[in-house]
Image (cartoon, rainbow, N blue to C red; front, side, top):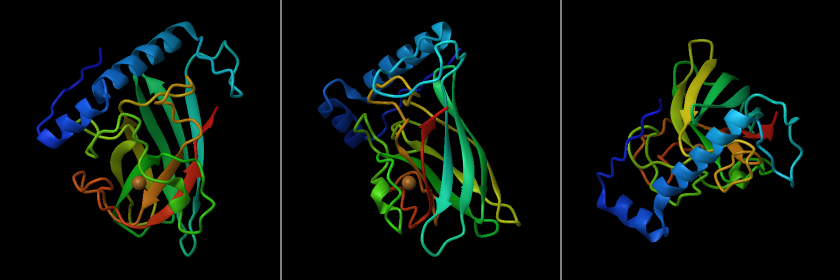
Length: 207
Ligand SMILES: [Cu+2]
């Protein structure tokens, strides 16, 4: 059974949530409920998009990360709905050895800009504050930093809370971007986490 925390330690976060007409937690609950139903029945559908067959057991997606200009970072990522949240797995290569790097779903699935800025800001359908997933207010696209080993490779094992896959809801990550940053996310600075430049960019695709 999934547990949720409703910590709202920062008045500004609460104000933002209230200003969003219903608040981020409501949006997340609805999306999670929809995702749960879809996972149970295998009936996740979205008429506007090409979807896996209705017999698919789980909502999944993938993304291929490609380096931004002047960088070597690349990778392959998998996203899967598990117990109402999205688990993110995969491998990212070509990072500076030993460093921690911000890792987020961003609002636009467009990696055309040489510096990756075309992917926009963090995916934030609930109009919440930036933060750390699992620890109070955070964007739906917020995930933990990834850490490279001495060989510059990071094994990704993170998660997203408040996001969905392939249901066509406002929280759906299909068609959104994924960014690996130069610096670590401090989980506090608004709205970016002060994670710096973009080393790699990818577009999330159903499948
Ligand atoms: Cu980011």
